[in-house]
Image 1 (tube, rainbow, N blue to C red):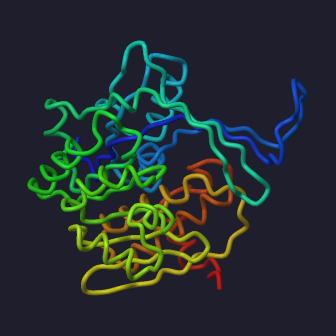
Image 2 (image 1 turned 180 degrees about the vertical axis):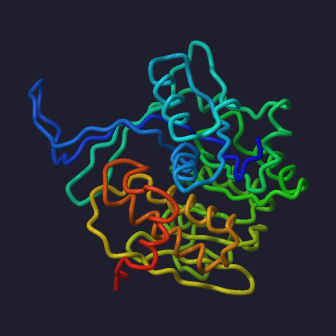
Length: 313
């Protein structure tokens, strides 16, 4: 099968509840409006959204041998994602997160590391992965076997095969900067949040943050900035993409939705500004519901949202 994109990295199960303001004391029970299970992670959430946007999507990740693995794999398959290159790790739980969504959309999280730490792209997977014109690596910082030099080698190989490479991470900390620096020379589109980029670079100003990553080899920085939209920056240009004004229910997965929308538009042949606007529309739609794929229906619906949703000022 010919794929539009191969999405490699962190695949997790999210268990989300909303709205949550406090955890009940002791063994008490409280009542909330909604609970969902979703496929998430900087690879998983992006893969689902890419598929919903019409991209032929190959998933490359790892799950355990528990009940969460069955949910994750079956959900990917239901969305049309190819799971033939997903790995099962015996005796290890599937990576998962519990998220308590606050009324304002914030999402404190409790994460259990698991099978994603054991992911390593196998030699037999490489030919099919690199047939995809776009290769997205997501999850550095929670991919113990892949982080650092193995990820750099993987993306370097992808570029040598003519693939467009994109890259995102999770839970940026200063100590993960070295892992990220290793891959940056082989990244066409680096897609962190502005908060993550600031932590990794040690800089606070946008100009200094951008310069930091461009100096380390990134071709284009695509920085998501929440309600301030996104900033696309290369040596040649800087483009501000405004956010859309929508009622926010949950911000989980908005960055992954932006990545999926941006890369889908690039694959469709849009210029970089249009791709940014399409990514912002996908992120806005996800913010209107609970979970990392909420709100996204399909490509045409997202294109219509891009052209009709009000801009946030």
